[in-house]
Length: 33
Image (tube, rainbow, N blue to C red; front, side, top):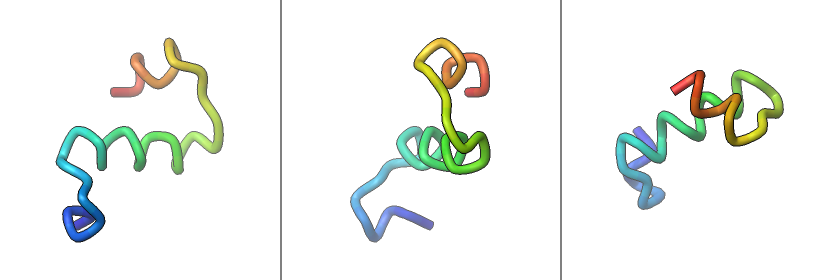
């Protein structure tokens, strides 16, 4: 869906995880992914 913005699947997954979490540090984001 976000490929039009130049994001691949991995980038999109990270973006969506951050949006759903509201905020996260790197270890927290890694756990979510």
